[in-house]
Length: 239
Image (cartoon, rainbow, N blue to C red; front, top):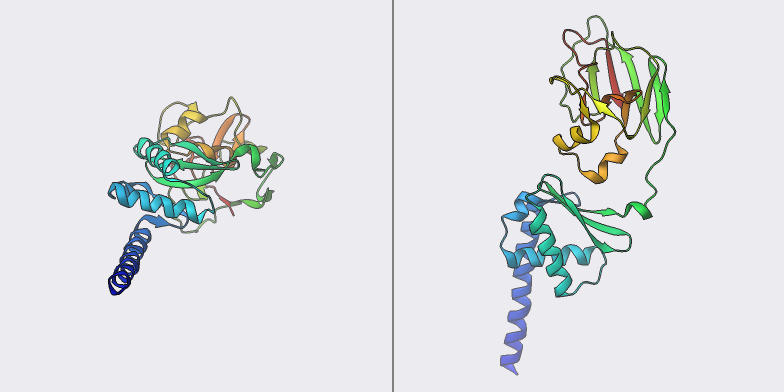
């Protein structure tokens, strides 16, 4: 009886040690609900299995060892890929993995992605775009400014050679962009590939366009046609 009690106590203690160790690892590899692919990649195979089991359990899904092994193999095949892939977890849920992140995303066919009518931009002002607001305003004569990263949701631009109206919308077939700092133009799809934009997020990116000519892909980058060569005339922002 004493031996059984000792074994039971050791098992409880072992599980407590494992849980404490896993919590330390999770704090290191998680950011929000996403997993950092590069930090995950550094883990040993047994730890990866335990992390995945815990991840799937937290989603409320019932998975056996075979299915966890399938998920493990899927991730291993995609965490070195810039443009990742998806793996079905349930009827309304995918697992996505690439060289940056591992995350769950809803199936497109079961998710009502936010839809909005194309918005015509006629002049400076504020424009409602779905649940967000696009703002375009002139830069003050003595206004101090610093150029943000291309991934920011605002940008200083030069609209001196652009005529209204412009259009706010999501992507369409035939869209192209003349990337800032580069010569010539390229298809928007190729541009998004080069910028590492995840496939499942491309349809929700808000674009400022002149017909099929994309002038700004919010959070991705600017066109040469409105990029500042000397001084900005306007600031655009998506709130």
